Image 1 (tube, one colour):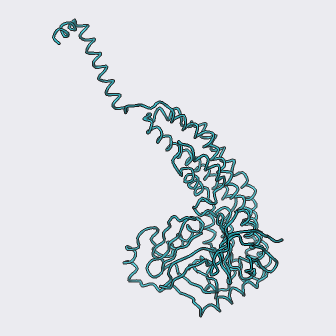
Image 2 (cartoon, one colour):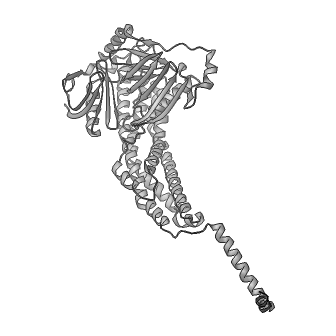
Length: 498
C-alpha cells in the first residue's frame, strides 16, 4: 500500500517547500526529490494539522489536512520500526528505561552550546535525551533541572526546562507528555514548577551538580551504530529481557491535545455557538479544554503509572481496562458538574448585569435535580464505545501477566497482543471524547443558551435592590403617617399649620 499527497513541508537545513509532493514507496518515502529511507526514521508525531518526522538523515514538519497527515503517519509507522528505542541496548541509553520518545521543535542552550531544530526527545527514568539529525545526542539528567515552566504558544504549549547555561524550550509536546516531564523532573529533584528559580539556586549551590552530558561529533559514530543496530532487529522475539525493556504507547489519538485547539473536534459548530451574544469571547474553547483535561485524566494517570513500572506485568496491571472504564465513568460525573458550574457562572454574570436577584434567576433558569440526572446520563452515552476496548485491554493484560514468568515467544506474543489492544483503546478513547464533546455542545445549544437568552431578555431593574427597599420603606412610612393624622383628626390642623 502506498500513499501520495500534497503538503507544505519545512525540511531542517533545506528550507520550506510549499505544495510538495509526498509519496511513500517500499524502500522509503519521498518529499519532492528528497528520499528518506524507512530504516533511518526515529519518530513520527501527529499534532493537529502538523506532522513531525525525525530521522538520522532528515527532520521535517508537514502541514496540511489532518486526515491526509494521519494516513501518512500510519503508513510511516507501518514501514518503520519506531518502537526500537525501547529495545536499545543498555550502552546506547546507558541502561535507562524509555518512558516515551517523540519528535519536537526545540531551541535553547545546553552547557552554553546553542541547539535549535527538530530532534527526537527521549524521556527515560533517569534523563531527558535529545537526538539530533546526524546522530548528535544530548543528555540532561533530571537532577540538574532547577526549573520547569509551561507557557502558551501559537501552536499549543511551550515547555521551558532549565535555566542559565542549560535551558530548552520544547514545542509540540502533548498535554500528557508535558505533565509526564514535569512529574519526572519534580520526582528526581526539587524542581520549581512554573516559578522563579532563585529559591532553588541557594539550596543547590552546595550540591554543585554535574553539567549535563553532551555527546557531540565525537560520539556520533557510537550513537549511529546503536540506532542502526536496533533497526536491524526483525521482531520482538529477538529482544533480550522484554519483561523489563518494554514500551508504553503514547496514545497519540486520545492524548494528542497540544492546548492549541487545532485538534478540537466539531470546531465549526463551536465557532458558530461562540457567536452568541450571551457568551464571553473564547468561553466555549476554554470550557471544552477544561472538560478534556478532566476526561483525559483517567488515562493520563494510568499511563503514568504504567510508564513508571519497572516490570511489564506491573505496567499491564496499571493499564487495566475495566478499572480505567470505571475511572472514566467517574470523570463523566465530574464533567457533568463542571458543565453545570460553567453554566451557573454565566447565569450569575447575566443576572448581575441585568440587576436580577440571583434567587429569582436561579429558581427560573437553573436545572433541577431530575434534569441534572438526565444531563449526566446524556453525557455518559458518549463513552459507551469504550466498553469493548476496555474488556480487550483487560484480557490482553491478563495474558501478559500470565506469560511474564514463562518469557520467550509466549511473552512476545502476549506483548504484541497487549499493544494491539492499547491501539484499539487509543482509538476508542479518542472517539469517546469526540462523542462526549458533541453531547456537551448539544446541551449548550439546546438547553443552556436558550435559558441564558431568556434570562438576558428579562426586564432590567433600574435601581439596585437596596435603593428600592429604602424607597419602599419611606413610602410606607409616609402612608402610615398620613393614616395616623386622619385617624387622630390632626390632618386639617397639620395642613393649616403648613
